[in-house]
Amino acid sequence: MQFFHELPRDLRYEVALTVHGGAAKKLPFFHGKDHVFISTVVPFLHQNLVKAFDVVYTKEDYADEMYFIIKGRVNLVLGKKNLCYKSFSKNMYFGEIELI
Image 1 (tube, rainbow, N blue to C red):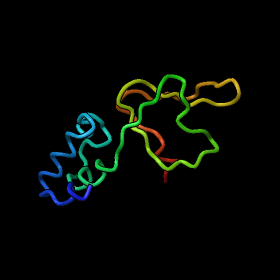
Image 2: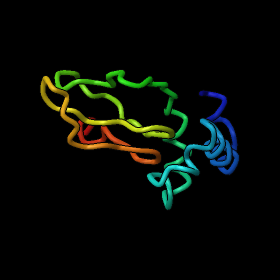
Image 3: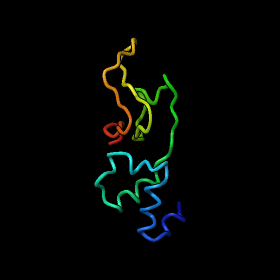
């Protein structure tokens, strides 16, 4: 990441827009954000492949990440019967409230 920060500001922004399959261009969260914000945040993102029925985190877990959905869907479930009470799909995000 040190090398990235040594790049000229405009080049850092262009690189940030292309890493992770161009996620910053596709995700509405980043639309309209300042170039400096995008250049600063995107290098900290990492890809996490979650398979169907995998648990991302539970109510008891300490949330320390925000999740952007590039493909598929995530359901928030409640109780022993895993009742779905909210769904997130492509280009949405979750975990920001728990993170804050």
